[in-house]
Image (cartoon, rainbow, N blue to C red):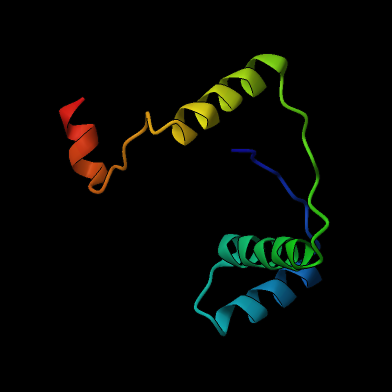
Length: 86
């Protein structure tokens, strides 16, 4: 998680507080809401960044895919129960 500290003018604070109040949001929640909407808009444009895997991670992923295709994997139907048994 990344934390961000902002300096807002009194006018910006008032505008954001008034906007958020219609949803029952405080200032922090209003800013998070606006950021999430901007991120959603970005995702809808289908312009996702592509991050290259390390060779080690790629090898692990390819092995897992090969194992799955070979029928060496099992479906977990109850995830909570599965983790409780670990």
